[in-house]
Length: 71
View 1 (cartoon, rainbow, N blue to C red):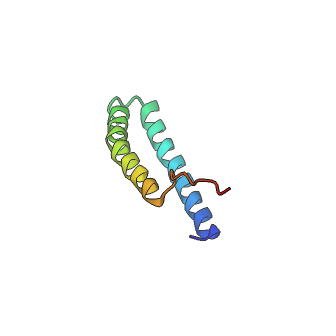
View 2 (tube, rainbow, N blue to C red):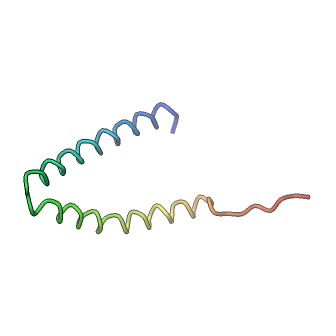
View 3 (tube, one colour):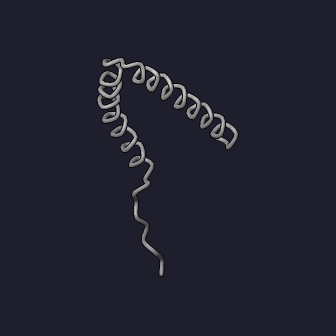
């Protein structure tokens, strides 16, 4: 991926994060007693598998491989 695509993707994710944060914050501020537990529950259920998959991708790329120095 080139730098322009990465920057555009970063802007999209940042905007999406701000929008979701505003929506959840507005719902919590309006004393919705259901949205925060539902949101946190969904996040907890999703973050475990997502983190595991991304870890396996990094291991496959060889990020943790230690290269020996040549003398």
